[in-house]
Length: 88
Image (cartoon, rainbow, N blue to C red; front, side):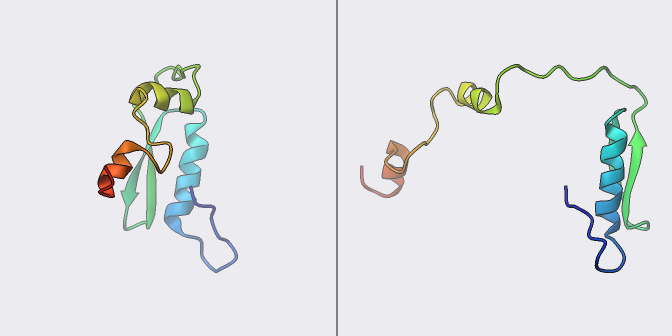
């Protein structure tokens, strides 16, 4: 999220209300809905408050590795890049 800029006049309403939503989301499930007449977001609390999510124990890198199953381009000499350059 952008950090509200309070040094140049009036802060951006969308940025300001996004921060309010983030604060609310620390303790309950919410969603944002753009409100053009207010020039910001409406923070709407979910009708059902689900339990906290269960996060995987793997790191993001491990999840990406597992999802792509060794099909990652990790260097400039990768066969896919060579084909795109017409070198193979």
